[in-house]
Amino acid sequence: MKLRHFIPQTLKYKLFLAFLLVILLPIIILNMTHVQKFETLMREQVSSQNLEQMTTITSSLGSLLSVSEKTFTLIEQDSFVTAILKNPEAGGSYASFQQRQKIEEKFNAINNSVFIANSYVYYTVLDEEDHVYTSYGPTHILSHAALSAMPVIQDAFLGKSLSKWQLEEGGLTSAFGIQPSLLTMYKGLRDENNRVYAVVRIGVDYQSWLRSAIPSPMNDELYVLASAEGEIYGRSNTSNALALPNPMNTLGWEPTGSKVENDHIISYSKIPSLNWYLVKSIPTKFLFHKVNQLQQSYFLTTVIIAVLFIVMTFLISTTITRPLQLLQKKMSDVVKRNLKIQLPEESYKGEILTFIQAFNKMVRDVESLLNRLKEEERHKEAMRFQMLLSQMNPHFLLNTLNTVKWLAIELGNHQIPEVCESLGKLLEAGMRLDVDLIHLEHEIELAQRYIRIQQLRYDREFDVHITFDPELRHALIPKLSLQPLIENSIYHGFAKIERAGSIQIRVQKQENKLVIEVEDNGVGVGNAGSTSSTGNGIALKNLEERLVLLFRKEGTLSIESIPIGTLVRIRIPFLLSPPYSKGESLHVDSSLGRR
Image (cartoon, rainbow, N blue to C red; front, side, top):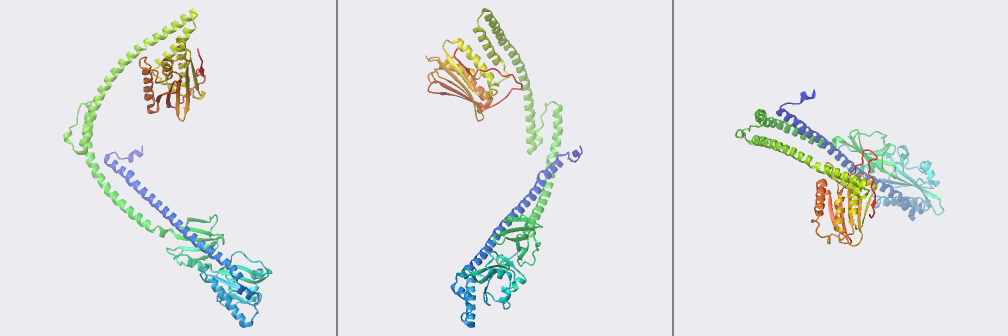
């Protein structure tokens, strides 16, 4: 009741409310939905591009580390380098200076090769004597004794080479005269006796590589290298970028992925050889800046259009409601005068004139319809009276058959009562005008009664076999649909043959259809002659029309000529209607033999 107070009663304000609810509100909702979808698509596209870019970068770092590791083999297989490292004292101090220069030239050649054409890889070699060779210019003179005292160098000389990259930073790398953090790997060079005669250390400046590998940062983008535990080991040089927490929460991260966190799109890609992550962070405010501007512009445009539409709605509704108010008054007069008045059409124009003309036509049609209904009601009363009269004759016939049945029983004749009983059942089924569909078992029982009458009538013997699935006994089929098919086989199929007649009746379910087939071994369709003379052709035609009336195009009847006899097939929709109570099923023989 309270809601009714907020609903306008006049057409003008109803149109205004309808505009707000049906047009303006959906436009605003669609606008917000589309912007959200656009933001989601943009976020997914940016994440996809970031992941593709970062996969390329991480693959580049993996390739750099892989190629750097393979240079151990280049050093180990170089005969000049190995000869110097195995015998460092040969040739005196001048020869030692030349040897150092040759080895460093070898390092430069490897560093400038096509495999690692960059300055991010540093080589350091220690022999068994007091010699240290480098591929770079250290910040101070390297001490062989200090380096040899390092546990990792001692383990390498003992043959415990480290086959994995490890992080060295701070004071650990200062002993080699290099300040930045490096990824390092140590390996001992062995002679033919498997004796370690030198240790090679490879260091990769991953931070310099990161700053050169990533594209020029923009919009406060931030790239970092972090361990699987979230410890940050390197970052891009973006002064305005928002710092990520150290350590980061990397729990549950997949090898590659993307997520939104603290108004930032976080994309990451794993470096398998290091068990590190390359992480990229982009603020969403820079991504959706243009979208927000577009949304504001679209909203302002929507508001302007809405205001104009509201004004136009009031003007249009006024031009409509004013004639309608006048029309409402005239229609009240029409109701009071029992549709005996016509509205003047010359007083209106445009759409209102069309409405007035339609209303006048409706009044005339309603008056005509009322007269027709009165006439039809009189005809129905007359037809009902005739139907009551016509039912007297079948009831009289049933009573007469019942009298003949008992007279035959008194005379000791057992065939006549059976014929009377079967004929009575057929007449009762035909008299029930309110039933069009009956159970299959009931229809088969009526067909069996008709067969008994025909087998008693004709001396010629014939067999009838009925086959159906017991589960189909409650399927619905048209009443008295088997009787004309059996009659057709008896009258026309067996009329001119000398052999014993046989009729096969099969009922089966095919998909959602109930298929009824009646097959006989008579003379066939081509030799049966005209069927219209006995009236059977009319019966088949009537059955076909009944199928069309009951099932439209889904009910069909077809007659086929087979090598011996005729096959009639009925296809109707499968309808199953089990009875409400048990014990109502009729007894039906699955087959009927000769009589």
